[in-house]
Image (cartoon, rainbow, N blue to C red):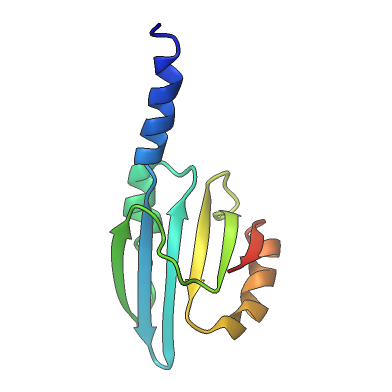
Length: 117
């Protein structure tokens, strides 16, 4: 009877670990909003490293949520981070015409799959 309980607990615990960070950066003629949804990055590394961008000359606000909010114009699914095996889904908000630049970056640099919302 306990054998079936373990897979159920694993599924529930992986869902509980779902984490996203919303990053809003503002600077000289720049206003960018993205949300990074963790796929397989260790939680501490995701929270303390990936969600702490160092953007010179920009005001950066970071907040956390269980998952990225609706309203993005595009998502880079399973984006690889810096040549590692770590992956995240990056949701883009704001100017939809930016997809012209974001899609090639997603597919070529991040080895992700671009999805229009």
